[in-house]
Length: 383
Ligand SMILES: Cc1ncc(COP(=O)(O)O)c(C=O)c1O
Image (tube, rainbow, N blue to C red; front, side, top):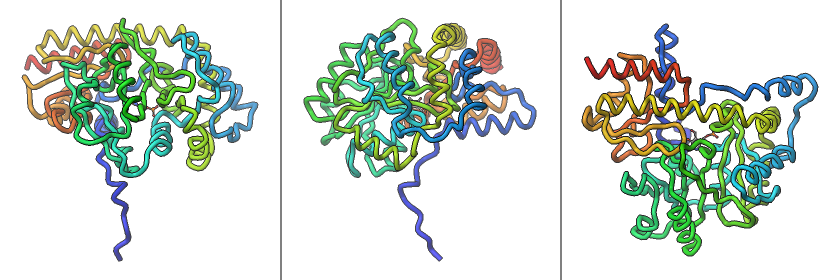
């Protein structure tokens, strides 16, 4: 028998998740592991949202909702754009999704046809490449570095060989945390509009920045697609809930795709997200914790001579060059985990070309854990 197995399903692993699995296996053996590999806040759903969610479980059948999500949540998102960023967004442009991960599928399916070419920065979030190729789309890697703050520029786009149909921009970026300053961001958007390139702006780290402003592409009747999520700023990774802001020409097809692929996003999570909007003080306290953690780690890594670290303007990552220590970030991370119980992610997950010389360290955990991790890393370098 030779049953067919699809080539589309043959995507590389998301290495972060493999490292997390190895770290969890060590934990199961009784080792004390500190998770700096995964971009996940150590906090959960904000406290004030917990009681109303519990009540709802007792009182409501929590059945399906309409495919684009409940009005209450879409209205809160519209209000959030108004108060946090001073931006007007139409309620009918907001689509609630099962995490931003489902948002990518919907956006890519609605905007592109098989064979289309989509530019992504490298280093960049690996799932962009892998979701694109599993859908028959071609990721076009834009090799970016410290000169352009690890972000795409018009100059890089002008040098591309062949036409691209779309581009994913993430500012702040994962893995670097770098932000594209507003004038450069707008130049890229202008260039894409004049060259019929659909922009998908992954704004999942908006709300988490350390002094620099972020730019949203959300607005009335704009051609760009916004991807966002409750996983990071709202500290709700496991609730699997996110949203899109969708331009008019894609709304009906995204609605039909969502109806067929997902029926509706998780109902309980939609309500939890509504209540999370009442907890902005707590969420801001989380951001203050990330800022403290960032300073602690930056100081320790600089003290032990880690190489160039990308300017971590936002998100909760440090992306560091480790070529002074090794040219094999995979072995480096695995040995560090084994020796110290500190898990971090090798750069190859984010950059197949140069990632063997880099690591990504997440500082989304508790300050106590970050201090302990810094102590263990320092000790291991002194051996
Ligand atoms: C840049 C970026 N986009 C999207 C995601 C996916 O997040 P979720 O599906 O939890 O919304 C992540 C997760 O780490 C990310 O870093």
